[in-house]
Length: 489
Image 1 (cartoon, one colour):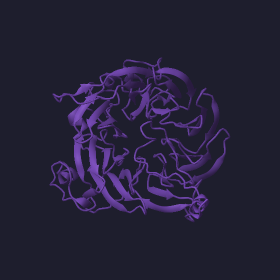
Image 2 (tube, rainbow, N blue to C red):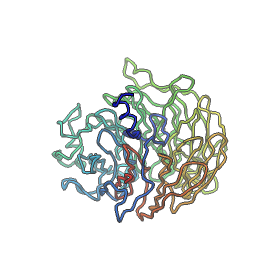
Image 3 (cartoon, rainbow, N blue to C red):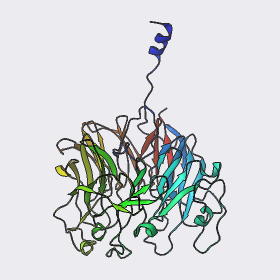
Image 4 (cartoon, one colour):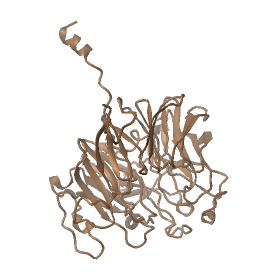
């Protein structure tokens, strides 16, 4: 063996390190990362295992994404970075991965007609999806935007040139964009173009497949929580990635039966070699669609072809669903989390709506070939969880503050772990660890596997809504007020 080969053999094996440009694994949405050598906790006082920490706003519900040296995260404007942007705004920040300093931000005034369109102080809740030098996002006003990841640093790119007007309040003069402002390449207003009715705040993690964007619209009830103002609105739409043109929509007439809103993002897989889009509606039903092949020559919006549908809660009421608002004993179901594909199975968590619904929820395992239920496992009163599936086990959280470890083959509960506070965030598995955060600010790391083992527990006292992200050897934990970059020492 040559000296060169001996030297190579003696080098330590490098850990897997990669960006996290979309929420969940590739298109399948499984909340599992291949990152290694990650910390099993940190100390906010001594800064042990803390690479850096930066202040955000006061409400941060967006899970951070990482791509090409940048971090993308949504928050609100109670901690303004630019004095020309004052007052309640949705804010989408692009930070430097090295130290967390602000590179640029998209600042979006609130919808002014009705607070139930765009709830006060909620900020920007959606996750970004990044591909190359473009970031795709749904704003707090229900707009789909394509952003230049370089911001205004390389000029005002794309056909959209009205950033100044977009930054201003209605009937106010345009604001002159500065070096810290975002560069919008194109913009599609879903309320105007697609006829949706936003509720509370738009939340969507856009799925890219080929030249198309697939996304949930956020359409839902009005301020009474008992009326659907746009019964013909789509729940799932397809846009052209390059231009933002509205190309296709579902034809399932979901809107009248939406119990609250459409907050579950779509996923993609191949079933027996057939590309498949999976989507959970605000009516508690999961759909399998054929992807859009191409736009029509006439430019008309086409209807997606459905393969099958699966009802999470078949015994629930199917008409006059809003009669059951605030009924904790019976009523329809809703799905907040994403449909997750792993090991040839589809995993869906849902049940009674966390704000208005009955006290019952489940994790379901479904055959993605035909929508047949394989098994069902009861969770707590409510769940907002997307599943994390790893090594034959499924991890899910519920609004009772319980972490569930479930056998992926049988649906049998392996163990449960109670935490302080309710879960809005989903579990994230990486490096043999499960990262978890609750709305009371309890941050815990458990060992992944059939034996329950608590590795660390920390009471941060600041609510956690966002799911933890791992990228390039660093764990990113977003509380409502701060973003922590955690790296093992």
